[in-house]
Each structure stands twice: as structure tokens, then as C-alpha cells.
Length: 135
Image 1 (tube, rainbow, N blue to C red):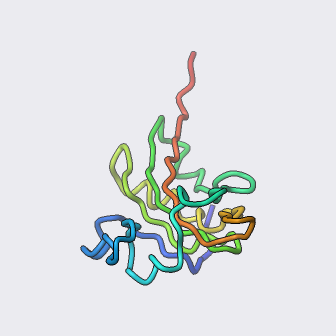
Image 2: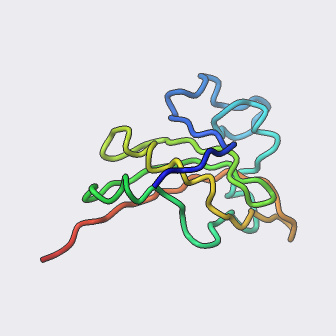
Image 3: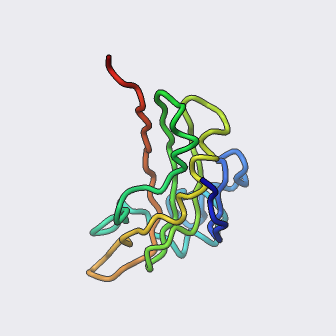
């Protein structure tokens, strides 16, 4: 299954610049410093962003994998669009995780909310793969 191009960024955490902590006491959110003022950490919201239907992942990449997990940081706009994806950890390690995450930015999201209003937010999610079958 070929993934369509997307405008969202997909990066490994080791590709991130060293200035991960944001100045002025703001919590570390990763990515460029300009993102810090635009995206609120999900734990500071009344409602965290969440997928409308489930996560869009490349099933062809995941099918041969018996089990695995990915820790991913997402930047979700107030409109429910995933603007940035950062792979923080993959187990087992390897490029399979980056390939599996290519369709993730197309996941329709319900945006985070604060005071009943949609807001741009960051969140960290663990995506688990379990294709083992008991016989």
C-alpha cells in the first residue's frame, strides 16, 4: 500500500536539534522552539486529542512483525490535523517503525480542548503491534 505524500513532518528523535527544552520555564516538547508557543501539552487540557477512527499505520510493514511498540510524540492542530510526528522509541529497533508511521499524519483526529474550545496540542502515545497467534 503506497502512502500519499503529506505536509506533516516525520522525524526520529535523534534528528531533533539539541535545544529540546524550551526557555522561560515551558515544559520540554521537542522540536523547534517556535512549536512551544503554538501547541499545549495534552496533560494541561480538559480533553486530549484522540483519533476519530483509529490510527492510520502501514499494515504491510506491520504484518510480518510478531510484536513491537513505538513511542510517538504528535503535534495536533486545533482543526484535528497531525502536523508533526516524532518517533521517540521503537522496539525492536529498526527502520520498520518509520515506514509504518508514514500514513499516520492522515489519521483524522478530534483536537484537544480547553474551556470547551479546540486547541493545538502535543501528546505522546504508545502504539503496540501484536500479530502473534496462539495455536
